[in-house]
Picture: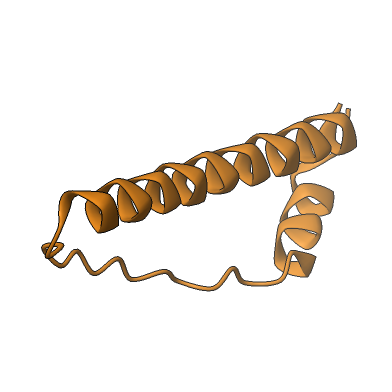
Length: 63
């Protein structure tokens, strides 16, 4: 197990993550709305998978 100072140094080396701003606008037709909804779902799923991947990397690094 790593000491707390090693953990603090490792955390400082992690680059900052960009902040995302979500803007929701009403769609003009149902066809466009489905497409935008699909894109939002994909974006959320993609961000979730990235988070899980980074979480597993950190878990293997600190164990």
